[in-house]
Image (cartoon, rainbow, N blue to C red; front, side, top):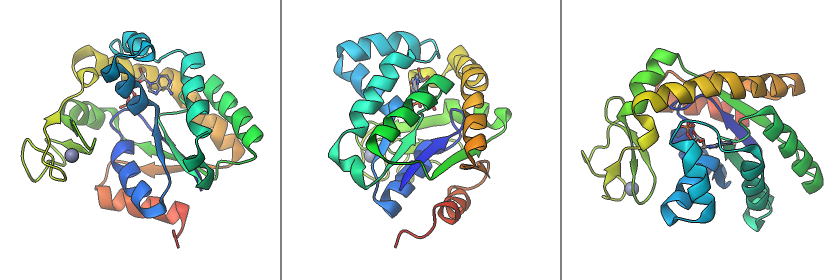
Length: 216
Ligand code: ADP
Ligand code: ZN
């Protein structure tokens, strides 16, 4: 099963991707996570990506397409994969289609999470991520049962620099301008599924299971 998760920053893609990964046993490919990992390792890619991420801008297509192609060529992607945060521009979507053609595979479903802007603006500054296992919580809407520590592994929960201040607005703006057109691209292919992301984690996941079908 090959799936794409789409939706603005803070729409809940990260949270749902953990559930999907468990239920359907497919790798979770998040370009945002890959860039953050590169930043924390201080690699050349990380230093380059950081310049854009700090401003709330997209990392250039050429770089992003390169890392996704490389990731998709790994053996664990042969049984399927879930893309989260990619493609984010029409050029990325077209490059992905090319790459998939070479691999002889298709995307079955593109799941788009809609959440009103006012809600995203409340969610993003309250979002925290586990330093170790990367589980995502929200201090306001979905707190960890262990307070300031991760309820799964006990590690520290940290805020993302780009979830604060002006960067949040910039990211939402960039999403509307550059990523919304990608939705039309998939709508035309007849594989776009829209869901209301402004509901509980369980309700949203139930919809996803309806779209993707049984894992058995
Ligand atoms: P969110 O969906 O919450 O904005 P991500 O973790 O997906 O966050 O992305 C964080 C940042 O990483 C983005 O603001 C952007 O700078 C960069 N990034 C992630 N995915 C892409 C992509 N497909 N193309 C370009 N830049 C990306
Ligand atoms: Zn954890």
